[in-house]
Image (tube, rainbow, N blue to C red; front, side, top):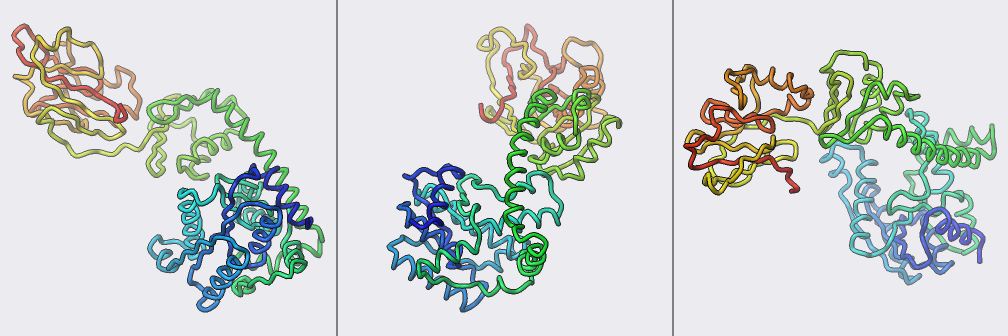
Length: 446
């Protein structure tokens, strides 16, 4: 058996976690690397199917590539899936580069094929040269330790069993097999960053170090291992500093100060929620600031509230709505209100639960729910006088986030319930109450 094919097979088991019984979907462009991958997998007896994307970007050459893939798979007895895309139109529609659109379309289609149980994993033909280029591109653009780890042997359902081989090895393997392949002419033109790196920069680096690809591959491997240690350390620090709260996180500022590399920790914890490196650096640099400092990411808000950084789903004002009949009504933030009308006898003992309000139905009429407004006042149950809602929440030591999402249930213009806190004394049940409106807070998954 050819040594190249043996190396690919060993990498699948050792690095990619793909057993001999799995079916692999080979991303087949028709170029040397993907053809070599397909031939090698067949040579070692792996079960394979192939997938070819026609992005219609190179005119007749794109059609040539598809015909080659179809002819090759027909000769080898390999099932081939094909798909064509109007890539330029997709790029315009999503406001992205053609390269990014092609990549997105490609992997979305691969995922669709896997979901149909066509295969277990997608095998792509990225090799050591690609990995070296990726590492250098990441350095040029600016990167953290993850970018220095290169591509990785496996990410989800995508495997790269050729990362331990070079493009030259793939071409030599095809030569030994007598197997032709096609060449993408766009790869020979230095009009994009990766092509310029491949055609102009890498030859210069080889003058300095003939083994530069192998050297960069070894560096990426060491950084990937160091990344595993980083992941462990970041997770341990998170367990010391953070706690889940309100659908997000509470980050204890004092505990955070006791950790090393605070900006890095904040970035690792907050980047998955869409916060940028500039934002997390700003958070780290202003932890002594006043309460109320806020940072926004798509769908999320981070607020400094005294000694805590509170990460919560973004709060949006909502349009007031009527609770004009029994049933459920959605609130922002994954909550909902459930209204139920009962007789006083059917209610039984009055529940003392902040998530439940029991209101006299004869007085609590024309109920509406709305966000809290500046100057709102109510008479908290058990009190003789009225109180500003804002003062009540401050006295209860509610967080800035809790204040921002506070809402009230009103009967006409009067507040009947500060939702989730306390009902208004004017709508409380009395000995003369005959019917009761019960309003409860529920989570939508309940």
